[in-house]
Length: 169
Image (tube, rainbow, N blue to C red; front, side, top):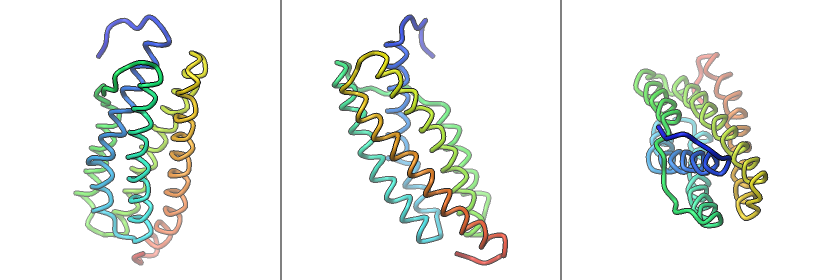
């Protein structure tokens, strides 16, 4: 994992690297796989929009690294890896398109909730450390993650209702 963490700054940098790993993995493979597997046009569109946002999250994180004088690098994020594995299981084990969409929304909400917690913490750490150049981009990403979670929840209501009735969306 990592050696003894001795300061809030070290912890901030570690968590920033986890976030960078998370966003890169989502942009490169996680979200594209979900988009390919989604059936409902509204879900595909929402996931595509979030993929574009995620690419900007990567760039924002790079600007945060720069603002604190640290080279951008990742630290393997095993939490996201487990969530990605769960999404792959949903995709491979559910044939019904509407039911798979419902499962993808659950998996997507899990990731969004993790990211909301992660970015909320990073914003707080940046504020405590006086990294004003990091606060705004981290807050912007936090707001986008909250909006993505709300959109998935909204889509889930319609998709879950249709799935429960046996209809496809």
